[in-house]
Image (cartoon, rainbow over all chains, first blue to last red; front, side):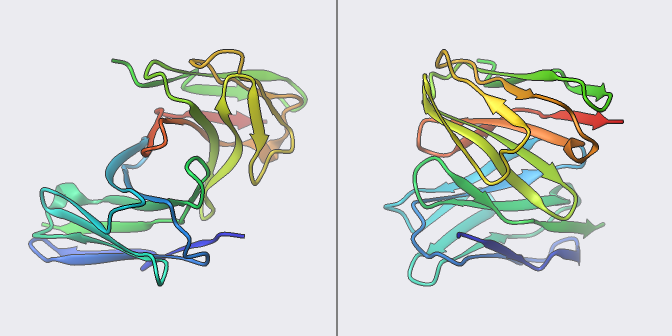
Length: 111
Length: 110
């Protein structure tokens, strides 16, 4: 059974720091991997999608990579801002439609 | 383009009542899923569908039914609500290239 672990569970950093969030899967046969952001009491906003033929994706200050051999993904946030404070979730699919989610990393960026 | 629309946004039920959570998408996506989100447990898959007329169970299907009569709609039915079904429910759809989520339904069963 696929399980997803996100480390750390919580993180508090001063504004301007670069940071890395980690996600690992027990089954490394990941087809698609997606990172989401969730603000308190809100839905999930897609940040980055790494498709089966890709190894990384970038959007602005965000970069996500996937190492399929180890079943690990990282989300890199450059020059963090207080507006980045949220919970970050990774989800992976062994098939194209069944996503399994990690429990998230709760990020707080201090001004 | 509305994306994924869930109704209602909030609902309080009494134990034993039944209800249907509605989900509709306007992106012509084949895949649709229902998740529940509970503190400390992340999002867990309840049921999913790979197309109209095709549904299957996820991790936590007990107490829930689904049907997919059209591509657009994927309602989730609670047969006899229990306090353990108090949760936030999310519907999501995908073309196979990543999921788009609705804004959620916060359900409380008393």
